[in-house]
Image (cartoon, rainbow, N blue to C red; front, top):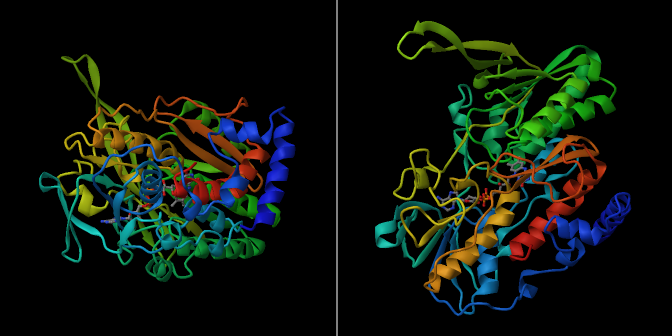
Length: 486
Ligand SMILES: Cc1cc2nc3c(=O)[nH]c(=O)nc-3n(C[C@H](O)[C@H](O)[C@H](O)COP(=O)(O)OP(=O)(O)OC[C@H]3O[C@@H](n4cnc5c(N)ncnc54)[C@H](O)[C@@H]3O)c2cc1C
């Protein structure tokens, strides 16, 4: 994004927020953000803050994505003598993932989100291009895939999630992959079948190509588009819906909406974890004639014949249990097939194996931490942050924005021999794109209640949040968070 584009966006934001009697400065302050224009001018070299602590120690960060780099930057800003090493296998680890949805909807291009990690590496931090293969917390050591063993005084685990496409029958050739790595396997497997996925940067480009093809098909006759949401935790829980809303807008723009059935398949039985937002989404779906299939999990896809198989689950009332004085509940399931012209696949997601299967992982894979302090429940010199931390409702960049400041405060406290006192309050945000030009800014916390930063009804779709989403959140993330400042 150029400075001119940003200035234009800021002018638009100015005029929009004024309608509500708020200044842009206040609006950004309410959102806990610094001035975007100022952040655009900030480089890593300039990101100098008052150094608050003389504490010393060897800090090892595993995973140099959004959480890992933001944390390293803030530690660099805070410690007088930082000794920080990051292990990260992907030289593109800081690509802007929330923008992949916008690529899929034809709003951004790949070059808008494609960043090199070396350009965001805080001064003085060493980055090793490798991955952690084995964690030895009793020895304060990590063994890398190359066989090299690294010792640490303090460890931060920020390895994000693995995308497990291979769990879906028919997509075994893709296997496990990540959002910002080369997407050739996904693209080649999907080929021109109408299948696509915004969960990888390259395949989000393919998604837009498939949306354009869907529009062409719809010009010739009736077609069916499917959108899936799997039975695992996912990063950005709103993304499977956002891409559906964007496709819907594009179909409306092209005047072919009436020829397309849009089906949404969700393993859960609700639209959103927060009732107020779920109710608003239900209404938005009704208005747009989306067809919802709850309790359906994509289990297979036949890309040659364009058939998707879903495992549908439900419960039935069984026999009366006289002892418990209630009916037995019988869990039932069956496979159901749907043909498609277009299918957007949200992959099942999991913690990376090296972490999940290690002593610092947990039964479900995610790193067990105290959800408020982000300190490991068993190893006090280990912290975890971002998508891989076992934190309720927390797999978004918005969550990382709140967490990394808490983690740095608490790690520095531990390094100084103090008790970690900073607390993460469970905040997260989902700017739910509901169409080209509209966003519902769903902010909430782990009490599953709306937690709006602005004095506006958070369940209303607004143009101003579209401006925030498309023009401001990217520079704030890339130049604000990644320099440890916003
Ligand atoms: C399509 C899409 C839309 C999204 N939309 C939004 C949105 O609108 N708003 C929002 O707030 N968030 C959104 N997100 C989520 C957001 O991008 C993530 O929550 C955020 O990137 C989490 O940061 P992280 O550092 O935990 O994970 P990542 O940024 O994914 O970084 C994890 C890093 O760990 C590395 N790693 C993995 N295994 C190892 C290993 N063994 N050793 C060393 N390193 C390893 C990986 O290579 C990766 O670089 C979206 C994500 C996607 C994919």
